[in-house]
Structures are given as C-alpha cells and as structure tokens.
Length: 313
Image 1: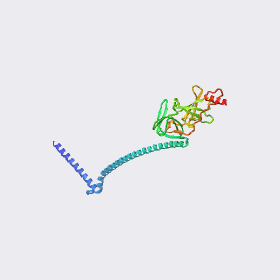
Image 2: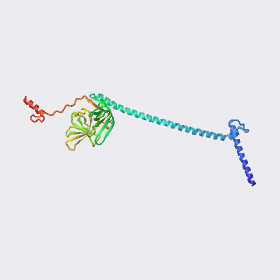
Image 3: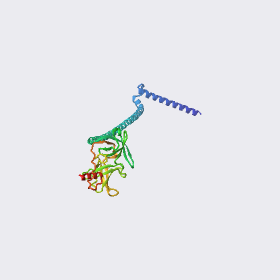
Image 4: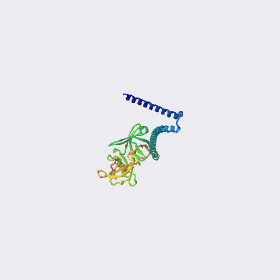
C-alpha cells in the first residue's frame, strides 16, 4: 500500500515538472521572439534552441502560402476559361451570322442582277417559307400573295432558270407548283438552232429530282447536253427561260417516241429566294399555221369558203 502511495507521489511530481518545463519553454520562445526576454545564456544557444521551432513555423507558413496561391490561381484560371468560352461562343455566333448574311447578300445580288437584265418582265421577289413534298405533288410556299400583285398561273423563276407556276394565291402567301411535280406541264423547245424540237416537260414519279421531256419524235434531233428552254406555247411561261439540260435519252413504252431525262437548271434542294413574273412585255409566239391544202380536199370550212371565193373571181 505504501509503495503505491509513493509511486503516485512520484508520478504527480513528474507531471508538474513537465508542465513547468512546457510553460517555461513557451515563455522563453514568446519573449525571445518579441525581444523582451534577456536569456542568461549566450545568443548562440538561444538561436540553436529556437531554430527547430522557427523552421517549423517557416515551413508551415510556406505551405499555407503555396496552397493559397495555388487555390487562387486555379480560381483565376477557371474564371478566365469561363470568360474565354463565352467569348468563343459569341464569336462563333457572330461568324455564323456573318456567313448567313454573306450568302443572303450573294443571292440578292444575283436576283437584282437578273431583274436588271430581264427588263421585259415585271417581277416580285419572294422567299420560300415552306415545302410540301409527297408522292403526287411537289410544292413550295412563298411569302408573297395577292397583296403584292401575285396571282394564279404566274410563272416563278430564279436567275438560274424555271421553278414552276403559282397554283394558289392568298393575301400574303402563295403555293407554287414545281416543274418536278408529275402533274405539271411546261411547253419547251431545244435551244440549239439546228434542232428546235418541241416537247413537254413534266415531273417523273420514279425520279423526283429530274423532270423529263416527253412527246419527242423518235427520229428528232435531240442529243445529250442540249439546253431545253420554254417555248412560250400555252400562255403561262414566257419563251426562252432555261429549264435544264438533257442528261440522257430513252424510248417510251410504245417505242414510237423518245423521252429526255433532264438535269434541272435550278437546284431545288437549295431553293430559298425566287422571282414571280407578274407581267411580261414579250410578244407571244405566232400561232402555228396549217400548211396550204389542195383544192377540193379542204377540211376547214373557212378554208373551203375562201377557196370558193377565190374560184369565183
């Protein structure tokens, strides 16, 4: 029992000694750092005793400075990266708008140039605002109607060639039947002076992107590469508007006529702006005159009457 009491007393003394040493060391470090404590030992001994603590404090301070600097740099880089991304998006949008404006400017320049060249036509510029495409029809919707002078059966063109005709006109919009529509019918003629073969251009259900010229005599002078233009017959389409080029020739089902497959002059997949011909000062083509008939074989009553008058003179 006495040994245990003695051992407890010794442990209590050691504890108090450690507290005293710790407090003394703290006071020495504190007052030495503030220059208010004059140690009885030499300054070299004091520096040697304080050196580990100074190094530890310096290391901790450096690490804290490094960490805070790294965090600040990361935060700054994040904000700069965010700003740069916003600028890139803005510049990308501006670039897209500039390219769109440039493309629109080129289209409008071509349209204005065509209007100045084709002075025999009064034309209204329109923009394509809709498309209707199914098995039986090929239609577009434009943003011009009766308020702009657009009426049914008016031809629609671009600087490249014929587009179609207006089939339905509303106050502010109209439907245009393309020459690709199987129900369309355009009187055409081979532009080549040595040929001048006439035919009808209409859409082909089996080949929706390439119309065909039908009713061509089997022995007619039509070859691949011929330019096909409107003939002016029918009273809707003025004469001389380019329709397309003959891409290939084939025989019809009966074998008596030829069919010309055309590569249309207008790229209908890129059709955005068109011109509606509201008036034409071009003289219509002269009507076809029948050949003179042999007297006594006339089938036309007017011709028979004229022959009798001539005979009575």
